[in-house]
Image (cartoon, rainbow, N blue to C red; front, side, top):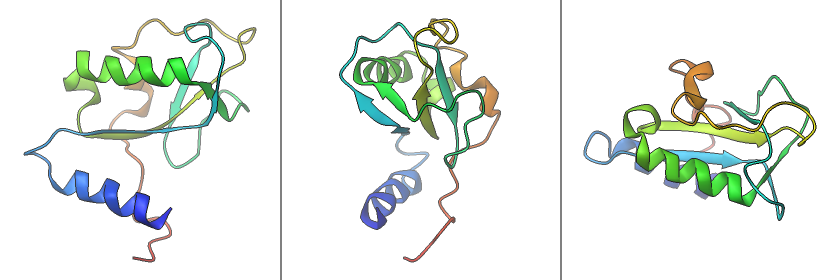
Length: 114
């Protein structure tokens, strides 16, 4: 985890030369995407679901949407999970998915041992 965090910090240090989007997905599921409500948060604190998983297809979709909406997803670091298919409505508004985070990003100072 330490080296993963260091590589993410390196990417962030390259801004504004390089736009980045860092997604920390929950446990990856081999299930169809587009059927669940996605929940975003920072630092493992995600209100709205006890689920700690997300379909791989949904992670891929979020990454594609980051390319579509660079003003919304650029220079962002966040956690991603998905509710159960029967709990909530499938996410379709990817442009505003991160609005609930306001300007928050993951805190890379937490547990710093580097």
